[in-house]
Length: 107
Image 1 (cartoon, rainbow, N blue to C red):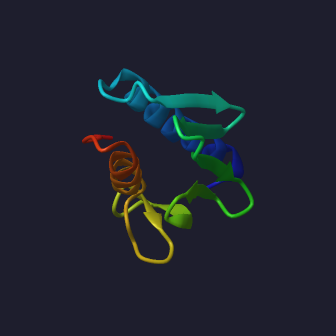
Image 2 (image 1 turned 120 degrees about the vertical axis):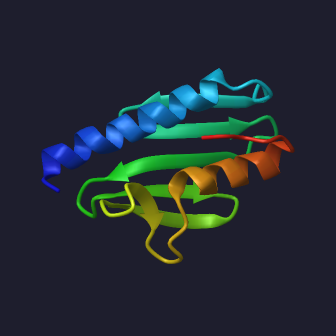
Image 3 (image 1 turned 90 degrees about the horizontal axis):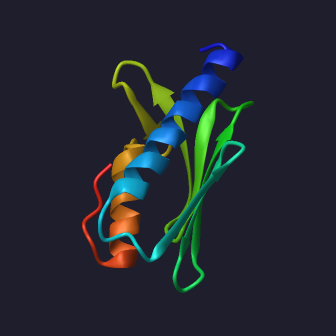
């Protein structure tokens, strides 16, 4: 994927995640900000999760309570997949946020 295409696609993905989380009921204790390609989720207890695009690696990186993860886009799967274990970005986020808040999260 070309660099400009990656930037646009990664931004669209972060926007979709932001909008999906912002629109869900039960996430009132989650502060969500998206600024300059960095999506920050801050929990009521001060814990944070950060998603950002890494242009050089063409990945979206996640910092979460489970530790760091790097997701590259897999065209065959049409999904952002963790380069270590193949987990889907959206499923990983839903699981980690859900565990932290004790609610079901869908992305």
